[in-house]
Image (tube, rainbow, N blue to C red; front, side, top):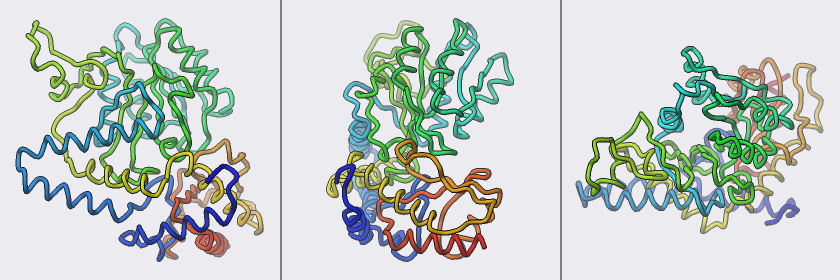
Length: 395
């Protein structure tokens, strides 16, 4: 499948995929939650059962097997992000990883953080709370997104401990351009840059190598476009990083257990410095099973991207064929400037979401933004039915 693949290609692919998602009943209801919570393929349940079987068979010796699954997941994320140099720390959620990362910053010496007003709640809440202390959090307007990277860099000074920004904005779906320039500017001023790539992973061909982001920290996870489910988030760490987070788990000692103590708390380099503690292994089994399924189906980011764009274009065409009341504003952003979902603006977004759900059409909203996100298993027929139901609900 290429960027200009035919309409028939993606429609056939979607229909063929549906049989692999029977437990989520994707053929019985219309799941336009592709940007929030995609259905899991049936193999995910096999992965969960394997986790139980391994625990029952190996008891406490299960950890060597579980760590192999974790390594497979790390390697999977590196492939998805085309990242030959970074290392990956895993955790249950990005909030946990952000706390560890923020705790390593020299905020007493440099009490200034630069971010945007369009960040997801995990980051937003942590930074808002820090802003109530002696730390100054500067929020740059996320619009216009075309100049966001430039405006973030302009705020950096010698008191700046770090810059934090999304690769794709979670409310609007807008892809943030010029990240290479932002990364280069931060590196030149020796200011760490952290990117939230949750809405880029496995929906865009988002390449660490091509974007020249080797020096950048990246957070993200598999709850959305990867279909891994909960508990599969990551922090991408530059290989030679030698940070010492204040919030630290005992797994961070694994890389230095055989070294003679020197009176200081010991840390490994790279991702080891940010490791946590004992965790539920089930999520990694599930994720690895899904990774293998995606590989079998040849669902790579480069193949999925045109699939998503074809679905979005089909959906947009269907929306434009109808007349809508004045309170509904259709998407007007070029499709190659957005991630995995379309946004319709209406003050009644939350009410519409609930009304759609009673008709087995699942979407979500953020404020006045009604977010509609196809997934690879959503068919053309389902998109047509969803728009028809939406029109009836709006009326």
